[in-house]
Length: 179
Image (cartoon, rainbow, N blue to C red; front, side, top):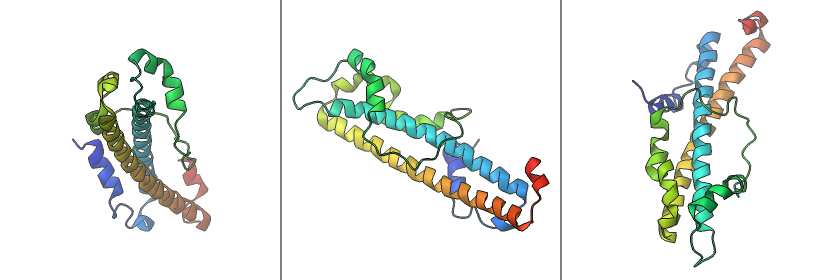
């Protein structure tokens, strides 16, 4: 059974869009749908990574020498921690769905390997260097997931452009839109 990463690797191969002009409308629509589903899953993973990174930064950004916040204050402050991120806004693409239909266990395995949900409660036990290293690893994962999402967006745009071009040129009928 292919893993989430195997499926994603297939979509991101340089040959995925080869001969798109020669494919049927149904094939192009299926490819676009496949890419969109993968993008939804990556978008969800990216939000999970960013949330954990925001929590780690809440521990890192306390004044030097100040004690780490206790778990109760972190939980109470989660709305502000997760909403007050200093990240710039993204490119403005709204996801079709907020969460994937199913969450593949291997999709979150790397994230859980860096900082599992059950380990968040122990962040107060880490020193500044450990927190910095953890933030770096989460940031690296976030950058990779974002790059994969950008590549999927490019594929989706290419597939969508091919569909539009066919309809504009008359190579595909409007009736085909309804089926």
